[in-house]
Length: 70
Image (cartoon, rainbow, N blue to C red; front, side, top):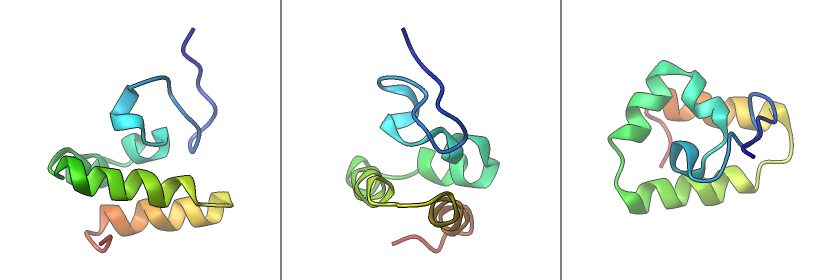
């Protein structure tokens, strides 16, 4: 059964390229991620898995939404 673990938690296996659902909730971030290459998404997955707080996740989502994530 797929689970929802909050804005920064997992939506389920394979959902939204295995990124935290918080990225899908932000329109600009979702659009930018949709246009990323698989390699860029992998970098984002790795970075998001290292986040230790909701504040850090919110900051990462903001950076992606503003196109400042590299």
